[in-house]
Amino acid sequence: MSKILVAYFSASGVTEGVAKKLANAVGGDIFEILPVIPYSHADLDWKNPNSRSSLEMKDASSRPQIAGRVEDIGSYNAVFLGFPIWWYIAPTIINTFLEEYNFADKKIIPFATAGSCEMGETNAHLAPSCPDAILVEGKRFLPDVTVEELKEWAKGKLE
Image (cartoon, rainbow, N blue to C red; front, side):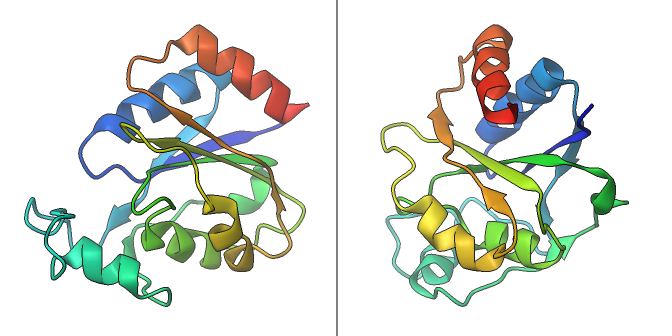
């Protein structure tokens, strides 16, 4: 039987809600990816080209530091990795997370939240950060997704 982790970064709480439903759906452990320096409302202002999030997303090498670590990451076979979509890809803090662990031969299954855009080129931007992992195609969800819908989707990803 697979041991499953649901790791997520949530800037406004939307991704957190989906992550908790997903953890319930798959019977997985949950880990919140928290930045060492929390994002303020001003930091998340995507309309401001000088906001923290805008500057991080303009710099592909940006790696915001993460507070805390997953204990015994090696015990997990699959990691559902959640985040909001920023500029059509995952926030760079997700690359930080992937680069902090050895995910060799582990399945990484991205899931995202966004009001209007899909996953875009997310996997292409994440793949260099987890070169030995099995990075599968993810999916974007709306906040009102049900546990049953998540269970059905996850089942197909874990087979």
